[in-house]
Image (cartoon, rainbow, N blue to C red; front, side, top):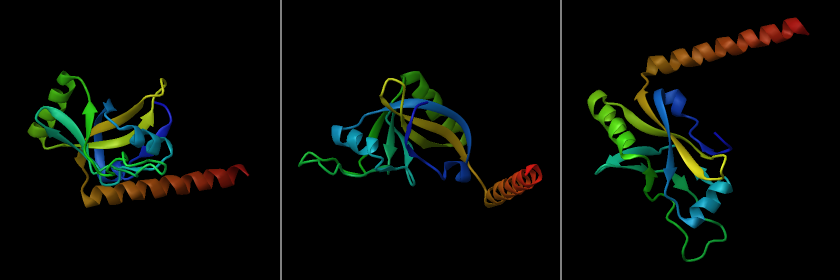
Length: 151
């Protein structure tokens, strides 16, 4: 995975990530320029399966500053590019197990192409979120103690 352009920072807090895939994403020219400038957001974004295709919805990519009349709609649905077999595999798991598909990050791969990392995820309960926060705090405290002992 290359350089992250946009990251969904709340994804690991709100969901248990089970499986991930790399997908292409159908973008317009001004969207590419905005993403390269870091003007994207995946906060409330999700992936929806419609008629055998996966679509990224509610992902906000700001209009390009130097764009003209051909500038894009910031919240338009964007088609994800995966093999048919992968789409079928993902959608059957969503239907059978009640899972959701969430975007984790939009990034540049080694060839300079913009890709999106999507994940099959299960929502966390409030107690799980609290437990994760508690574990993170304990780990930070142990790291502080270790660092203080070295100095």
